[in-house]
Length: 406
Image (tube, rainbow, N blue to C red; front, side, top):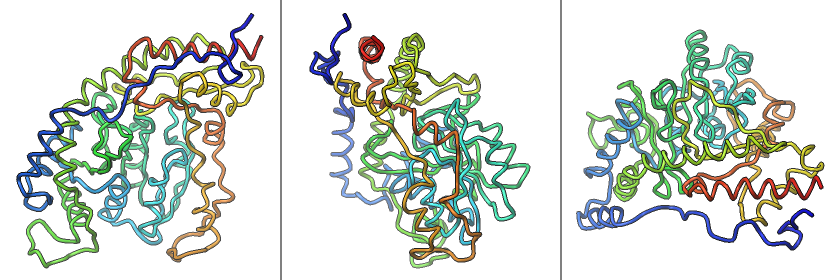
C-alpha cells in the first residue's frame, strides 16, 4: 500500500524549516555601525564603495567594476555606455527575468528573442546567429540559474559579426567558464545583489569589465554623465544617478566573505541531489558541461515528465511538493508573451519609431516554451542545507510518484 500524500491529507515528508536567508552576523553589524559612525553614507568620497568594487572585480577575474543601484540598472547603464539605442537590435534569450529585455526597451533599442539550449537553458549560439540582421548591435547571453552560457560559441559569433557582448550574470556570482569567472569574458558583464541573489544587499548591482574605456563610460552614465577627471557641474553624456550607497557596499563586503563557503556547500548539495534525482523515472536533471568549471547554483532546475507520474500535470506536482514541505516553482514564462511586448507590437505607449517592427505575438521559441511547461525550480537557499535536506527532496518526489503510479 502506497503512503498517502500530504496534499490528500497524509503526513508530509518534511515539517522542519529550510535554511533562512539572508545569512548575517557580527561582521555585517560591525561594518554597518562603521558606516553609520563615519558620517559618510554617500558613495561620493566614501571608502566602502571603491573597496567593494576592487574586491568584487578581483573575485570575478575582472580589472574594473562599477557598483550601481541594482542589476536592472546595470544592464541599462552598460547598453547606454556602449552606444546602443534607438533603431539598434539586441539579441536576448526568452528564458530569463524581464530586466534582460526590458533594459533594451528602456534605451530605445529592440529586443530580438533567440531560443535556448535544452541542456543548460541558456541562449543557443546557433539560434542567436539566425536572428542577426543588419541592425543587430549586441547580444546579451544570460548565465541562467548560475550556469555559464556557451561563451565559446557566443564570443565566436560576436567576433564574426562584430557584436558587443554584455553578459547578464545576475544569477552567476563566482560561476566559471573554463576556469575564468564570468562577467568580463565579453565586453562587460552585469550582476545583481537583490535580496534573493547568492550575494545580496537587499538591492544593488555591478558592472565588471577588463576594458578601461568601457569602465569609464559606465562610470559616467551611472554618475549623472560626469567624467572621472571633469568638474562636478560638468556633464558629458546623458546619465542618471545610479550610485550605490556606502550602506550597500558595506553589507556586500561582509557578505562577500561568506560566499566561497556557501558556493562550495551549494555545489556539494547539488551534486548529491543530482545523483538522487537521476534514479527517479520522469525526472530529468540538466547534464553537466565540462567547460563549466563552476556552477553558481542560484537555482537548481530539473525537468518533469508527467507520463512517468500517472499523467498528472506539473501544476499538480508543484502543489504536491509544497504540501510535502518542499517549496518549488514553475519559473519563467517566455518573455515575448509578456504584456509589455504585446503593447510594443501594437505601438501602445512611447517607443522608438526608428527600429524594425517586430511582431512579438508571432515569435516562437520551441525549446523555451517546452522548458516553461516542464521545468521545476528549487532555490539556492535550499542548497545551503545538509545531505539530509537533499534526501528529503528526493524522498518527496519518490513518494509522489509512487502514489500517482500505483
